[in-house]
Image 1 (cartoon, rainbow, N blue to C red):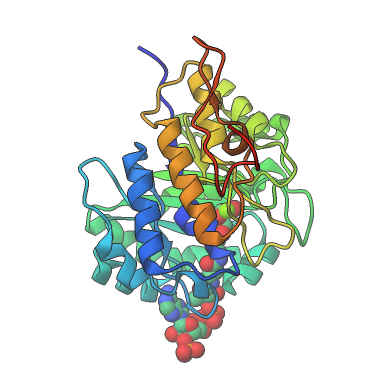
Image 2 (spheres, rainbow, N blue to C red; image 1 turned 90 degrees about the vertical axis):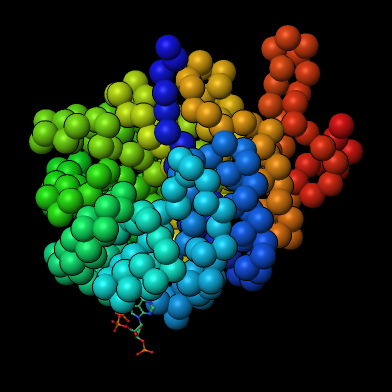
Length: 318
Ligand code: HMG
Ligand code: MG
């Protein structure tokens, strides 16, 4: 049986939280429907954060009830505090992610708390979600480097991951928030995590592709035994509180790599390209990812696949 990888889609949340173009509720719902149709089974749908902090996702309460209930599909939502948990519960969420970081400087800019404060805010949220039987993830942002304090030693990220696991998360996700990481850091972080007793199947990685290292980092993660990676259809993404952060690894680039490398994941490249083009059109710009521009590739004919004219493809392409 082929090795199975989980692709955790963050386009509707991370992808849209930093955009200046307003995306309608209808377009968000359709984007997510297209992601489901492409085979994605974990789609981070939105955030129940302060609408003043992230106005782009202020419609979370209306969005969540509109998403298709499909067996096997979950829609985790970002929750920073109990107020967010109240809203998430009222909207019918069934999975969440809490978020903190490896550095106080970033955590304070992002959510106005120290790491310790953010863990205290997460404690009752995770307890309530646990009692409701929700799947729970905990993000450790700036695990590869901080825009305010620079290099981050793996041990600092692992300490925060251990604290989140103690609070009950099912999975920790190390974020390269500003896209500065390289493969040997991935290996070092996995080594430090496993040495501290964190099982490989409770670790995920979230790479922003700011400096073009995201796919290389995925390969390092795969080699180290990690089988869950975040990605955003169309390669959108970034955090308004992380200066210099650019888009997430594009889901279509990840799917191409995994397909051609023989990993099983259940996601159709053509479907992701459709969803990515839809998102690009909603944002009014061309699709910038590598595979979004080149298409896939059929080894039986040598031809590119999944390309089409219009927004999201280079002018004049077939
Ligand atoms: P604060 O201002 O320190 O908190 O914000 P507060 O408790 O003083 O509340 C201020 C106002 O917000 C009050 O309203 C509250 O009611 C309201 P006012 O009295 O002024 O009218 N409020 C809320 N409203 C709705 N939902 C809530 C909520 N909480 C308070 N949940 C807070 C603290 C955490 C709320 C704020 O800083 C915040 O929402 N930050 C969100 C930041 C964010 O979403 N960042 C992006 C996500 S993290 C990320 O992108 C990284 C990741 O992708 C991984 C990686 O790349 O590494 C995950
Ligand atoms: Mg992110």
